[in-house]
Length: 145
Image (cartoon, rainbow, N blue to C red):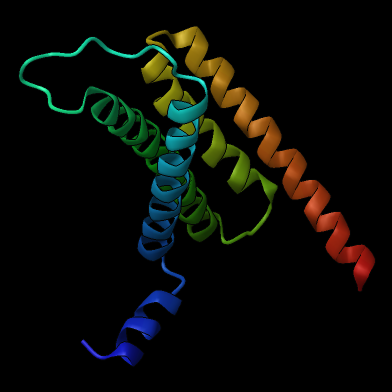
């Protein structure tokens, strides 16, 4: 595939492409965050096992993968729901982002927390954060013009 075709494909603003970009960005961010967490905060060195050659490396890779997949799911669900709501409602406002954040937080973090109350709390917190950030960023845009 030619470089110009790849560039044209990535410039498309379809819900599928935005969801893929959100998931990819989440995967990259989560992997880096997992590496930082594993290096700085996870000081429990696993016992040396006979069938594992580098137990510390394996632990770090598991933490990176766990964070990466969590962030990828959050980014993909958030971007996908936001884009689908924007296309369905034919409006681009903070409600799309708030609903996307709620669905992403409630589904992913609620699943990881294994309770409905933690899912609702995480979804609400992410929805509130998304709405506040969208409001603050939209105010900055209108004041600059």
